[in-house]
Image (tube, rainbow, N blue to C red; front, side, top):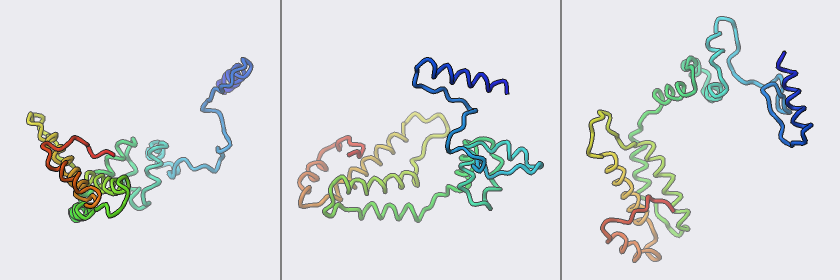
Length: 193
């Protein structure tokens, strides 16, 4: 407890100097700290010391969101990053039917009297989920010089522009849409509103 006097002196010096800043220490307690706080679901039973010792706050937060029957299968990750990657590898499965459903939803998404910002917001949610489900492949050989990833990304952005324009209400935006679609190349918008 040799550190306790140093802590008190540091806080006292801060207050005596007239400064309004308080120096915080890992030894300070605040109103939300109490002995009943659970910082990890892992209880030390003796034989599980390694598991208990690795239960950092972030790892614990992640583990506490996992169903108990699955938690025991991922509990030995040492860092939050390793745990996250393990979970992603095991449970992030490409769902072909969901990708097709998203494509269908995108083709049917129309403004139908909505404010353009609201219509764009609906499209953006679908685009984000689609991009997360159907990722653009990237070169893994290290020898690619053709820039296929950038070309595929550009094509996806052009698809977004087409989807946005084709869903706009004809009465309000038909002429503007025709003029934009007639331009070559299409304007660079990156679909941000």
